[in-house]
Length: 139
Ligand code: HEM
Image (cartoon, rainbow, N blue to C red; front, side, top):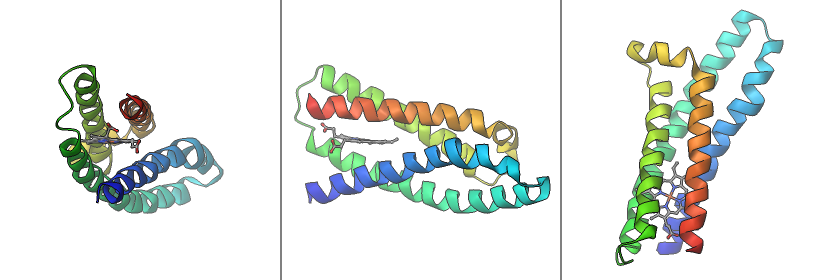
């Protein structure tokens, strides 16, 4: 079971962070070749799909992450727990940014107008989360 949950956790992280990297480094810099109207239509269609993928990834990461926390529950208090707490806080910041960018509500529109900036911040935080996770794994 632990191996299966670890697989779910790592695969979800790969899909979620990989999706952000694809948007930032490949799609956004490339849409300039399209006319305004086509660009808008493509970005709307992409966001519609990105929304469902990222929401699924968030649910899977939280569920598998909580299971992982249960597995490491008996680790004595110390640097491990400090870094795990920092990791979880950063992960929830990433989730908040991604949700603000993808929830189709008018109140988040101003946020979406600077989507590249917010996505870059979320990506940087997610890379930090992965670095901390590697540290936690190696002890
Ligand atoms: C952006 C979100 C997240 C990413 C990218 C991420 C990524 C990772 C990665 C790559 C690992 C290492 C797995 C391995 O070495 O096999 C890991 C382990 C772990 N994650 Fe996450 N994770 C995220 C969110 C969360 C959340 C929300 C929780 C808790 C609620 C959590 C709890 C854990 C725990 C307890 C471990 C095991 C650490 C250890 O090996 O001692 N993660 N995570």
